[in-house]
Image (cartoon, rainbow, N blue to C red; front, side):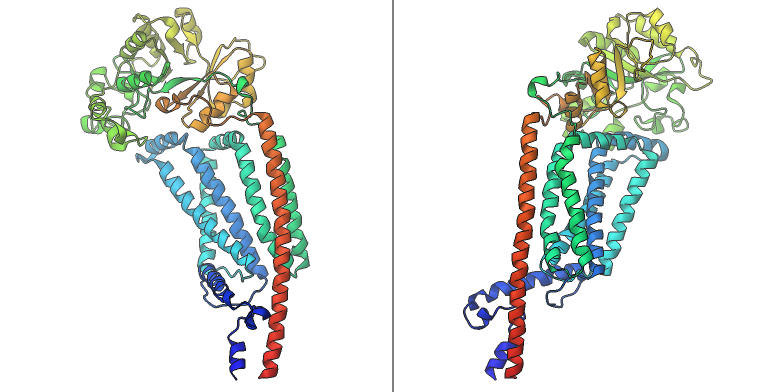
Length: 561
């Protein structure tokens, strides 16, 4: 009777040698392994019932594949939200213009994407462990709802981006071009790790269709990854001796991360950060004074609601210069903290920021002459009915000519009445905000373009023809490194103080070195995949032997009983 009790307390998968006492010391390991599988099932299926090893059902496999797709889906969306951070200030401004709400939406987007990606990766890892350990893949209905929720939420984000901000897909494409060597290595590692799960399923499944279909798809995917570097053309895969000179900086509205935008404090911070050009926006007041302002209204960057509550939504140009001087341009910067940098300012810097007013164009021109800094600006036409609606260009040009600034420091960007400006002030340096056409009769020496509006080959084409290329707005080191390697002459940036410290691109790789890395990575991945299939085959045979012993044990138990 005691022998029978002993047989009944032995796990079905326990080898015969353990029952005979030869490996009794290994029992705790099997017990821990069983508990580990039970914990995984508790999270994945919300079931704490111990089950024998079995092949996952078709429904379970479908959900596991869906979890894999959701993981890739959310991971891609997380990557996209990180790329959007370079231009997120534009989105923040646009939402404020439409809804009057200021928020750093990058925090919201990245946080949500990170939570979704983290959840999906945990679910994916658990499903892979369950497949390897031969446990059923019965995804609980709550997880099924959450998985569908992830799909819906990310889909809405992608649709919204495509409808309202589709230019950012070009930014994503540029980022893929910039980081493609590292994405390739990461993809190879991920796909080779997947071999363990696929091999385990291959040796265990009885479904002949899936047994050969899944490996075929896997082989195609692996081969595509192995040869993908043939199509990679990242500009930073060049010899160090061929690296173009570092682009110099145009301060976008000065140094708006360190001081309120389009103020004299912002100008000073830009000069101290190594900026060579002050890029700004000019409007003409009701009484004919050109001044610095980006937005159509004063709501975002001033305290106009407090000073002129009944006229806060008026166009900037409909205020007189004396009225504009009553406004403070600092409070919004300290309260809204648009770049998350206000907290790092010293007490003296805060005092300086609190005293900022809207500067006139004349005031800025005097400062540019003093520091030998060039100035480039967008010129906004006043609304209809404005006294200077027709003559705003002449007013601006005359303001410049009435100062003693050297004409070669004026980078004239506006297309309005350009020919007349060239005749009136031939010393102004003409900057064109458009791409050169093949049959263009005008000779372009300098172009100012969005980094999303020019290809790598076009940058090199322009530079080959000795045309200076300025790209805007470049804030992140990865993007600055990309345009540096591409050969851009200069960049317009909000982050002069950060980019000035880069002595070389954040990564630079010799083509021969990348070729070696490519070959070694592919060979190691191939060896790892083959090894995974051999190991899983050996494990499958061991389990078959253990199961045979278990069946024999049950027969003996029945005979004894």
